[in-house]
Image (cartoon, rainbow, N blue to C red; front, side, top):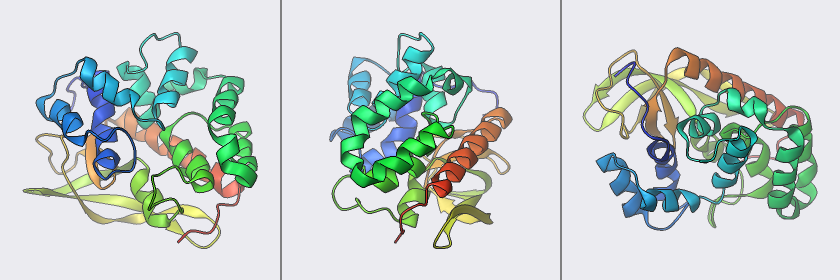
Length: 249
């Protein structure tokens, strides 16, 4: 319900990470254990260990935490910064972010490293949208079978937002702006109805704003979070387009 306290950091992380994990795209292989923690709404050492197994997200969380002298990479503020965005992102020094990216991706990107580096220098921050729009197209960071960038993958992998229109059993209809590709640029199209899974968000009502990942609802968004997610998404779309996104399927 609006105004409810956010879940503990590890659970908030899992609410976003579980959907690509269950599809086999990232994170540890024990999908059932991750779902068990989220379904029960409990945290513990086991959940923290599972979170560490997300090789794509964990280094970003660690970098954000270290930049703000927060000892726990799964602190709720850190998790929110990575998936949705908040002021912690502005505390990450470009030099530290650059060293992290260089260590992780330069060799893998090969000739594609220049656009990644340019996006960083132009204002990229360790938000999930940077990873999706400015890193993934050049490095193919999903597991085998989804290595080539496609519009569908980028649209489903980004953290989207939408307003609930109707709730009908296991399906929630939201109005959401989908990602478009005109052969040169990535843009957000006009709002359209989209059916998504309710995830673990309870008591959804028409008018609620929600975040989505891989066609599943992750969490409700308050007005400030909605504004922030939109802002960072727009920033990294602009940076990706400036770097000439490779041809998408």
